[in-house]
Image (cartoon, rainbow, N blue to C red; front, side):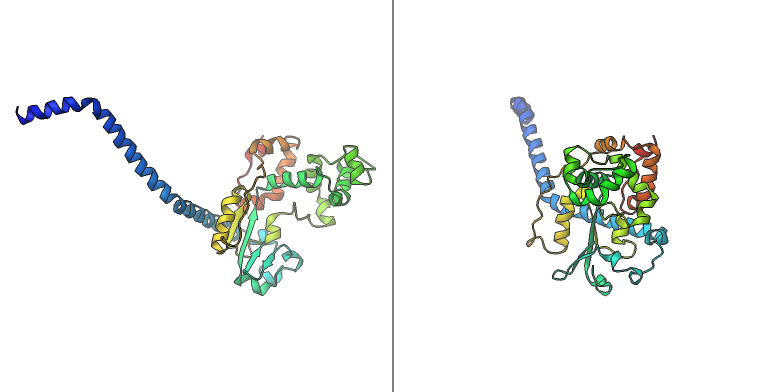
Length: 286
């Protein structure tokens, strides 16, 4: 038998197996590719998070430089800030960490970080936590005034117990009306839970080393601990809190008239711009 005949015969004999062998080869290649990707995932993920951090800090620098006086309200350095304006800075001297009160001269020697949240989602969270729950302090100091001014209740219940027993509490729209009322800040500065983040943390005067987002809390916290070389000392617990979905945000703001939504955006626009949160057109362009 000639060699060509032998090759042909062998080929015919192996034909039924060829598909199987090709499949094995394909699966083997895919397995190797997946192994390569899996091995590279931690490095790729770390690099992606690092790049995300650089973009967030770059956005802060560029936005601040674009209109610094507006974001700093006329202040040009840390020396222009009162202790009251720095009260939101929490210091850890042991690890040289500052989390958005510390003497001004120490700031440049510490690792400075902050965590922010979508401004409108943050207001929903503040309302739910302070006005829908049994909270005596916020009822006596805020809710009763809000009920009198915007819910047409001339004599709201005297205690939070009586208010809850009768089902009385400010509506979400009442809360927004309170925020938009020019008399609110004339009386006293916004309470920290709804005070604009840029006013609490002064990101145009303090150069932060890390900017975390509530929406990516788990990965940001892990990256921060690695950056601080504390990943073996501190274990960040998993977050089980349900994040407010875009649909839910729309439902909450459906009770707020369009014009008031636009005014509210103007009130918190600097937070949106500085921290990279998109303008919620679906709420503002209706």
